[in-house]
Length: 228
Length: 228
DNA sequence: TCATACAATATTATCTACAAATTAGAGGGC
DNA sequence: GCCCTCTAATTTGTAGATAATATTGTATGA
Image (tube, rainbow over all chains, first blue to last red; front, side, top):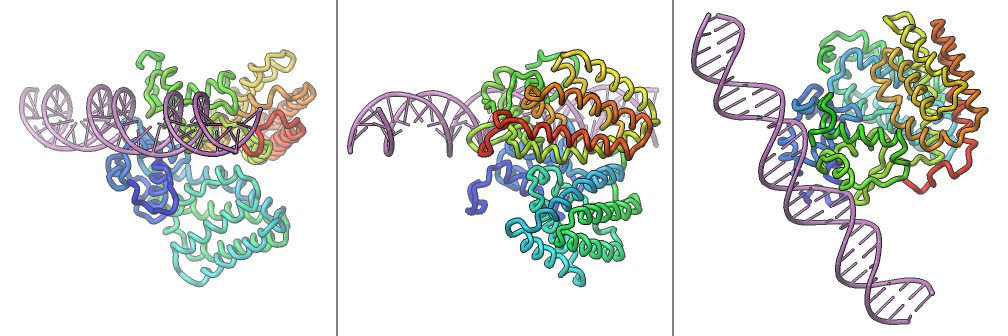
């Protein structure tokens, strides 16, 4: 088990967690799918100890669900859970946007943000669904990092965002897409202007609109309420 | 290892996690303390597998810090980390307070809240430091539960709050205590009145004031910035 | 046909043993 | 006396093996 990338010596549990998150991002694992420990040990060439440690960690992060004696599943969000998560993300991401705006002139923040923003907008007219979601994630990560609040990265759960996306993005309509890009433009303008208040309210409105769009989706996009 | 409480069959990792959290609450474990896996296996009569799984979970929750090949430590918060966490808690707890106020007339919410509030206030003139902190935690838990947002309980990290308390509560002055009780009174009044906006801003101000008090504390209360 | 009891299988939960890394301390050189 | 190096002890990381539990399939009786 020492042939995996000679670049950096990731611990076995981290290796497993990484593989699962990548698998979710790439669609190889889908919400609701059961994860058999023995399969993971075979695929990743590690023993069950590290696999179980990784599953515990991911469960604590809300990416995986564990049931005693019944195994691990990629978490599938109910309609209720999606709403609850987005209500929380609304305030947290708005906070990040406000702090990012306030710090826009620190270090290389402006340069980095400008670059992330332009890369995101370059997908406005293209139609590469996976790539745009990737850039969007990096856009948010940049904002969180600029906020300077190191704890935010634990609270703004990028992993969960990947769940939301694999579970829901395919269902969103083109007009939602257009609206979102307009909102990114608005948010970026306020951040670049150093206007914390406007960045905060703009981001808040953006997440709220996204939530409302999602809440209008049909039931098939969600797990049944009994799943947990 | 089957003699521990005949009440409910907690899994071994949960047993370990519970024991650690209880230990933190009771002061048996203090921030910065190293946790030796072998010691935990001996004290709790479980093998190292479950111990390691529990540590991974607690690390993901921000209660424990893991260093590769160097073991696990009860997390000791730097000044910066305390500030960052409280900035986040300000928005999250305010959100919970708003939702709680909006739901005050659902089910037995009013009754439960009234009761939790009165128990907390009964400590206003007593001086039982540990007990009041316990009631305060229950007061917050009640608010979070009333919010109806099931995800909030994962994001409003009660375990971390125990860290903050063991690390910092002894340093707070009596006048801070008086201020806090006045603020609880204010918050409770707005929640009972079903006034979401006022409950939100009241809670926000309360957490902010607490943060400002803490930020005035001397360095001895915090971990050195290099600790991580 | 359906329900139930039982056996077989699959999977998880835990323990024990070994390997790798770090840390602590003794010894020797300057 | 101080610092470096090397060895021993401690501790973590991982693997493999065993026990306990849940699930599936099958047969039996009403």
